[in-house]
Length: 150
Image (tube, rainbow, N blue to C red; front, side, top):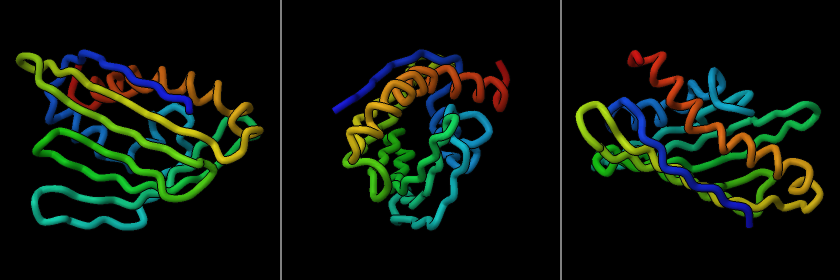
């Protein structure tokens, strides 16, 4: 199964970066390949955690696929967990972590592990997904600079 992980230091605090990544409705504005994102539902779990069910449409040239995920926001732990529910994947797991590393500096960790249901779709879109995931860190850092200032 393809997977990708990165750890990236940014000049913003962990709380701000968590909020930025948790604001999934804004993804179509800056996330590579994200054409649309619709939150179907949101539930407060009562202990500071929130769960979202979201449909994300990714598009590249003639390819367009929508998948549904369960997104768990854990602000106290500064962790975001994404669990695949439905769509073109056999499996998708995504995890974001945010660790303070000084005044207005944090380490953003990104991990994704996925497998397409169709080998054909996997071979056609796999390389494109890999390139997009490698651009995620810089896309979120650029967005943070735009929202919170450089």
